[in-house]
Length: 142
Image (cartoon, rainbow, N blue to C red):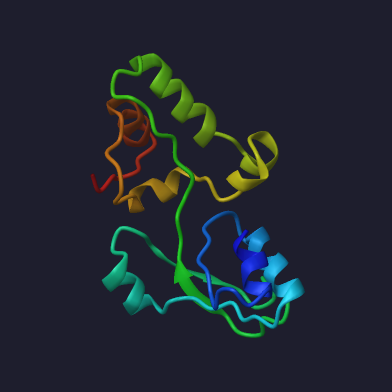
């Protein structure tokens, strides 16, 4: 585990992507003298143009007193293009119509919102998923 390697002094840093606060970072902060930092918006835009800038408010991590700038990513479903149209539309509708994704789907889905789809620069949308967004009035980039 990266957090254990950090605590043992085998590595100096690691990157982890998951729900915030990231459990492995919490573990590392609990067992090593560590600092959580991000990338400022210009760096995010230059290095990772397909991921949107985001901020983590003070207190997200133990000892964090300032806002951390970084990048965000959202949950998504990857499906074969041959997924039946009705199923693709149904999956998209069920996931993105949840009033409280954290309790109705999974805690990691807390920020899963249809409005975030407009920032997707990673994968093309299934035609029926794209139809759901169009019906919801959400413009897609790809």
